[in-house]
Image 1: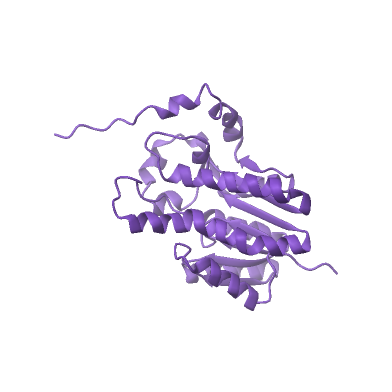
Image 2: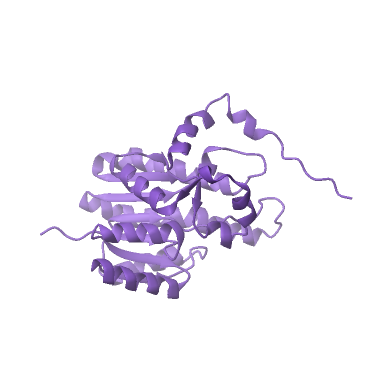
Length: 262
């Protein structure tokens, strides 16, 4: 009898992370849910156990802490689990790279958005290689595909996740490990509420927004097809080749105008 697979999902208490948990549990995959808000994790875990009969473990960790990935890895080992799916999803909008002068805030942001992703890949890829099977999604963003004036932090860190995913995919695909950077566009989640971006959401036309279940379903399907980078949503898949072209990219480098102080 084949061993039941287990997925570790970060940022699992809401948004895309919670939707990944729901869809993977529906496939009969056991879960390790990671986020800061333990009460939200336990609530989701209870729902998934009842609905799908899968094993769900919760780990309350703040991935902006340097030791969090190590503690997560140790906890997984203590639970006697082998991670087959890694969904690196935790993230926030973050501070302005230059205008925020507290370097500790910048460093904390990089711990969460860059180092935790790399650290968890570093921790769990060897086990995947040993069994000849692994699936990794690093949740990036369409912001990674469009270097823009005024964005010196969020887009660049998401671009690193694309490069990391492409490198791991090229290196280990032939050994049964599929790695993909998922690049959603505007998605209906709590992200724009908790990151004070509600006004931005209101200003955007509705056709640019996709539901979380669509983003996750398309992402999991693309992962199994061996995609290294995937723009979710038909609009964004159509636009991505144009955004990467030498003709369109200069348009996004037009300096951001500042309002005059009175």
